[in-house]
Length: 297
Image (tube, rainbow, N blue to C red; front, side, top):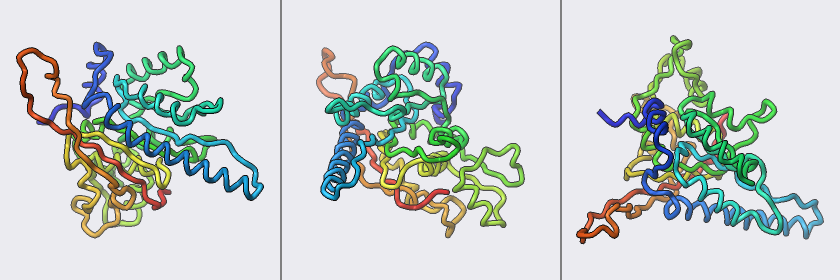
């Protein structure tokens, strides 16, 4: 039986007594470099657009920071590293990050309450927020991007430090037309599939596929998903048809493309310990996925 890392009860019990822990390191040497590359590239494009507007005498608009969603933020220091990176790239010439630029999420009420309390004490209270949410529940995901009743506040960056690993421990999620009252709310992608394939009244999806579909619906085309995982095949499903539904179009690979993946040496935990001359090399894996131009209604 796999660890119960997918259960809210597991994490609530753990966070009750644990105030800081790093799964697969703090992300500074693994997640921050590809984030830096994306942010600086975005800023360069914005500067180029500003120059073009100046040359054509079109009104110049201020830079808009790419909105970031940190899923399963937990008690890691990664959320602080992300804020530092955003500030180093975008807070120049007196500019400040906009409200709601960085959204940290977790389904643990304890962690979210702590995060919001900490931010109230700091200058970054406006640009960083903590939201309670289960990324496998569509109603929790969609509320993160709804503004004035419209889904118009999409993210450009998703970061995920071993949250996908925890989610993958769960069982398949069943969406049933016949048992709607007892079935989870389907995202538009899942609902449209069920409605267009009348012969199918029940759909089973692995939790990672549900996560990918949910995130696709709230990420801008061209946005990225940076994930750090202990697994070297965490996203293999992107190139596979949905289980038991060969030939269908409900394939996560329509919405996400794996742009890069590389191994990084994991901290052994033995560095500097007396009497330890050799520790076996363990690798973690950094994934960079790109949101395609397919539209999610």
